[in-house]
Image (cartoon, rainbow, N blue to C red; front, side, top):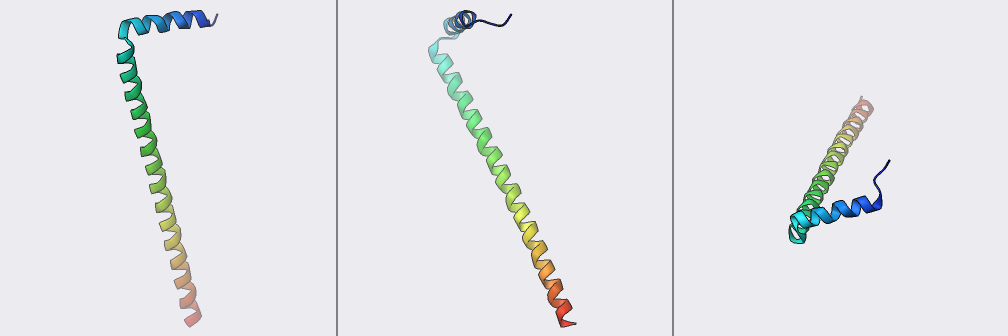
Amino acid sequence: MGISVWQLLIVLLIVVLLFGTKKLRSIGKDMGGAVKGFREAMDAEEQKQENEKKEIDHDTTDTTTESAKEKDKV
């Protein structure tokens, strides 16, 4: 009971007739730009989180090293 290839082609033909190829091309371009922007934003957020994690790890390491040095002095 699925959609056959012929039914998809008929739907595609109707969509092209309704909107025209120029309109569909511009819609595709806009959608591609939106997806690209979304991916860039996600990558930037992941890098931000990784940098924050590195800073936390670095701060923890510095604190641990300073504590060890103070214990050695005593």
